[in-house]
Image 1 (cartoon, rainbow, N blue to C red):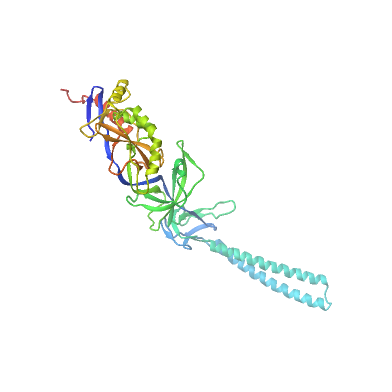
Image 2: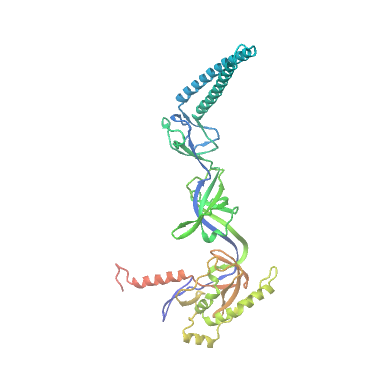
Length: 451
């Protein structure tokens, strides 16, 4: 473990440790959060108005298509139906009478015993009677539909999510002006969706059909699988950050996922198994190589000069030597000569570094460049690592592959088992400095006498 020591310059902390190139599984994921939603919510309303006589369902009930949801009072519509049936009977009798009158008028006209005007009037009376029959039949069918509409049935299989009315309540029917009373809402929860907000920087990596893994707090240790349905085109801005809603559909045959549950969505973009890799903090960008080398006792100018001179040659060397299953050999920068190191120390361009008993490097605490975050070093980029070499270190150029938040694949420059220095992150250095500052302030603990 790192130790703490005093030097003439003040407190300094042993923060450099070592790590090895190991085979790991590297997975690149896009993570987002959202909530479980029904795919389609149906509002149940009645076309008939009146008192609710029966309401046999409760919230949470699973109903099949056609199941009875509510029964509305039929007193008024039943009376209207009986009246329409009677009107149809009268219309049919009148049609029969007018038909006989038309036949008699036709016979009289043929024998010359009546005028054509009287015959035309008989035809008109029959046509009117026939129209009244059709009108009465249509009215009766309408009244029959009104009777049927007093029984509210489920339009599809689903779960009752919410009830808005109770038995005995008077409801309004749906009309051209009136929206009507919503009796309840229901949805088919055999399949649900998650509306997750994805940062705009990740949208380009996603596409419909990609598999996703969803976890919810209600079932720790269990994951649910689904796939991306779509990325909505309209962005949403929250706290000056642009997001795009991603719709993920999840099968829910067991009914465990319920609307409103908070969900975490992981979309796997790429995964490699058993590839040589290093922690991100062990790999530095070409721009940071000199600064980190300074903390390891190397002349930063020498490090930068080596990197500039060899990065192009490293790429050429790697492409010509590496075949299937082979990796190019390491390109290393030797430690600075004693004369160059003395010159660097005299100019203040380098920091004194030496091995400590804990196996790390001992140096004055200050910010050290962190390892590249995912996306900073694209696959095929050149990075810099530092390997132990006697009392100091050597610079090694490496070629990187895929990278996630923890590890970076090493495709060339090192082999499995090679040891490299693991510089601390800037956050760790700042935390250590803040702790030392607090210890200085409270050198005497209140309530205790100092000796």
